[in-house]
Length: 585
Image (cartoon, rainbow, N blue to C red; front, top):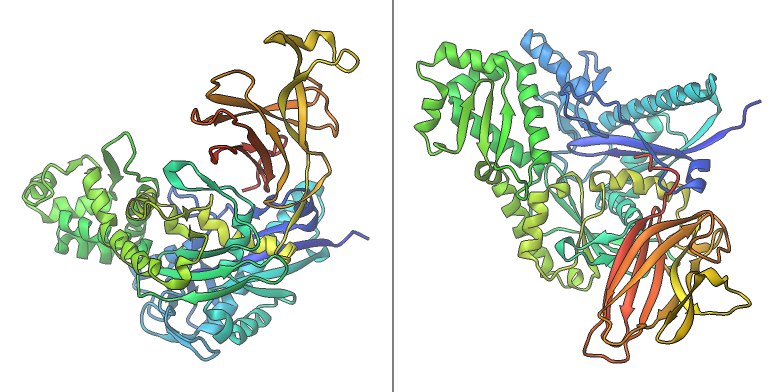
């Protein structure tokens, strides 16, 4: 009989995108971030690859699930082109109208054509779809590894994430939907709780300053989740022994990434004219999706720091054909008659858009978010926090990040890596270990290279060198964290003091190493790997400088800090610790 495989899976149903992640208990014990995401959502656009799929649901006339995500969007477009969509149900962006609603089992939502269904029924269908998709994905993965099916030999605990404000008023509705979907073992946690756990595993940088922040139990922070349709804010306390405490904050409405899409459609309508766009949008629904996805790719890649000053946007042939047929002037001549002259060039099958125009598309959204955060920053409870964490899909926009750091130059603004996936990945981590303090086992021995006074009874002669008339031994491996050592995630281990070895020294360069042995003696020993260097600037104003060096082990990185204790200055460097295996996501 085959062993039962214990799996934790997380489901994140968002307003604009939804998805799932999973990992086995064995994978979690081996590496916290060995987490699997579905990378097979097919958008239909060759350059648009996402780990989550749009939150679109398509039902047949008898209210049976037909498809979800990209597939649902394209099928409904085909039905509309064929004028066969009237009896179907298409729900676009499932939670967009629920922002200010108190959800109950009988809360109703409208689909694209105005027909209504209860949100509980829709959520049940989404959970059921994700569960079936997940089990198929696991079955395929197991078959490819062992030529056998283990679908009947797995035990899954589902972690369902919801907005913080849902946890009190909508818990019964979510529980009912999960049970109806066949989720026999599940837990409900908040999105911000998941984000908080995920952020504990990473060194979070504070923009161009390069300063690094480590999230630890006992801290208070505010999580600002910026998605497609707006902003959700939660103040979170992370006690050292008790469960996370958090409460939702509301400071008005703000736009999300979808507003940028709306501004783009206004721009395209201005370029081609309302009549032309009306015909195109009515007769060529599939091509409209292609155009929107083309812009989504450009939106995700756009940055004000890019070396290039223009963005190429490829246009559907059907749109160009309609324009040529209906219009009596060249497209470029039409553009030049507007205030877009010199800023958009029509060339063959694409538009070449100036950086200033792309920036303007982000303008209304950025303005609303900055206004929201300005009000938020005045909240007494927010002002008592250690940091502001930006997460959600739109937080990954470099335009938004640049604006936030410009308007709040002194605030501790943190954005985790893969911010769009923080909820999914953090939920997996909580599913495996709900405790607020996480303990990990060091997979390697970590330390740095130093020189010590030469001892002929302990040190090989070939490593001796003379400095200022004294004999020293080079390449000593000074261990900070030992292989197999159990460490609280984010805690600093065994601080060690170093002293300048020459007068008027301005920089102390500290080489950092890892070893697959528990007790390496020298940095030249077999199995020792050079990770890089930490450079510590020594303040010239202090003659008695000494540097405290400490290491903090996170999930897949090592934070090394050098503190000039006389001046109080801190130098930091981050090194990868997954020396033998890349992350799964």
